[in-house]
Length: 312
Ligand code: GLN
Image (cartoon, rainbow, N blue to C red; front, top):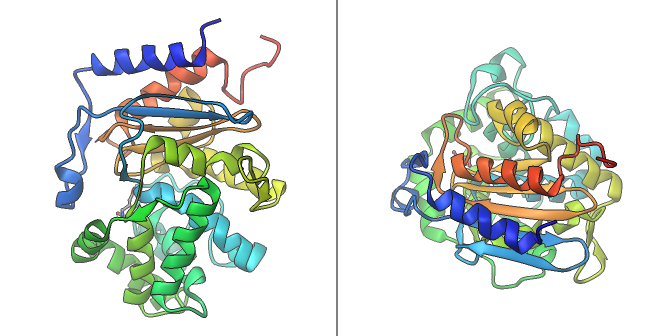
């Protein structure tokens, strides 16, 4: 069998030859100016070894991938009562859709669509100033990544606010249903800032290790969430992590994954590895086009799909 490094090098070579790379998000200038030719991948195995290839050490805007970390943190704060305010079902709708919110009376389908993540931000804001809540989220991400150099890109956060009409609409709508406990601009301040966290593939794969290791950060030995909670976050990533493309991602890649509009995907092989891939061009569903293809190749070659027979 090929080594993991050889598989990653092969994937990088294959991806650099791809002509159709999808469309880079342009709703804010900071994302619109990213070179669509970028491609990076990092895999951190549970035994502590890692392999990287391509632009794996260049930071990018993690955007909605941050929703995995805010969910884990909020569950730690309020436990299962979080589920009184957010559902756990795939939405089948785009990440910024508002239609279900009316029918379902202000309870977002899941914590990974924008409406759900805004409610999670609202939970993290309780008892804090926005600045403190943002600081807590960043510090949680640094803890799980075991990396104090991770920062928030303030220009990205500011641009998100200036252009965030749909997110303001969602927050106001949630407020109208009584499912937002703070002023929309306060809650969105937290949301926009966590979306603006920047990480490289290697940093992001490190940050995801606790989900592959039953809630423990292997490099420090600290348990940050219970194994049951890590398992459940993985389940939500599988069913809801790619919005209306979640079924396709499960079908093709077969592991829990969370995408971001910056072109990153965090993917978890429970018990085995944490993977991050970055290619800025998006498919029609707003998920990284080549990132999804690369992960499909990786799980196939390593036999990592959670649906594979282990004896095969
Ligand atoms: N900041 C983006 C938004 O709220 C995040 C969306 C995403 O990454 N899918 O629209």
